[in-house]
Image 1 (cartoon, rainbow, N blue to C red):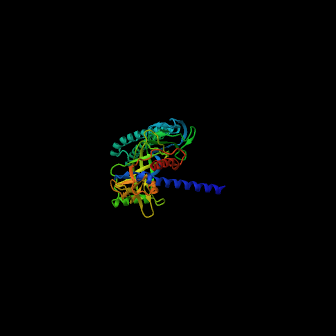
Image 2: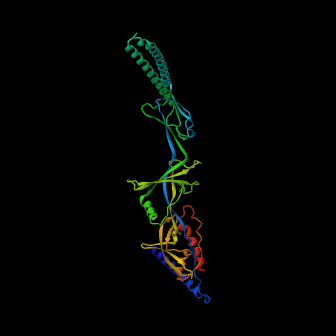
Image 3: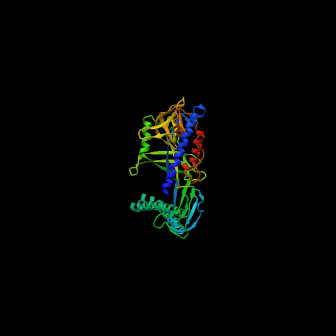
Length: 409
């Protein structure tokens, strides 16, 4: 059974080939007229300045992030914010039991009152002893002791004032306030928890997400290649602020442009990569911290370059070539120099001139008929996309067959 199927396939192939040859022969003999040259779609070369871009992936981070922590020990009494809301700098977020700190404040205030009373007595003693020591009514030693007590009383006042300030700070710390403005997450502790006893307890996290950072990595080899090309004059550095484009996980474009902040000048010894950071506006909160994105970063410019779709270039071990249609309709295989890839195109830096017509499709029919010259028409990029789940080749096969059939008529 399998042998019969193979035999049938060979017979069908032979019939198709014979039919094609017969049609070609008929075309040459039909009415004594010469066969029309095959139609080839061409793209006219227009050199331009091409921006070299690198697509890097990275994780988004908030531009500012602050951990809300308990700065004094105590039992947490209340949560004073709504989880997930926007809070302002200085806004109270938690209340810790402040009774021990209020008592310390009152004790410090009492110490200050005692110190001031002692200072008043010491000042009076000094004033009373001063004329007596001048009249030798008391010894100089007694007067010196009075002076020492006066100075001690003044020092006790300063100590008590410092204790009051410390106690007031601790009372204030019992109300945990927002260190920055931003979006606050969930509370990490609940009411009744003992916080800050032996460590600075984290209570919540505030993030500023109106602007996000994205930290990227680029291989040192890729960065060096661009630097060498700039040094030799093949590429040109970009001037001014550099905008970057962001692509989301689903492949869609983020509507706002970002800004390149810096490229690190040091290569990571462990990974062999260079760190790059960009800044992305996020006014509508579409992006979330921790999300992965792809960033297209312009890094240099190539002047007098040509963008050619990848399908028009034949890549070989020793050289890369394209087929050029000359003015008389004949074909020429031209060697080209490829700088690098950009999307679905190759960046050509040498081998093509202004006005050259690069053959894009229709060359299969030229090879089949053996034609020496061709007709040309402007090439139009395909707009149709393959159905979801269907291979691209399967979607394009019927179109290619229809095109070949129409050209053969």
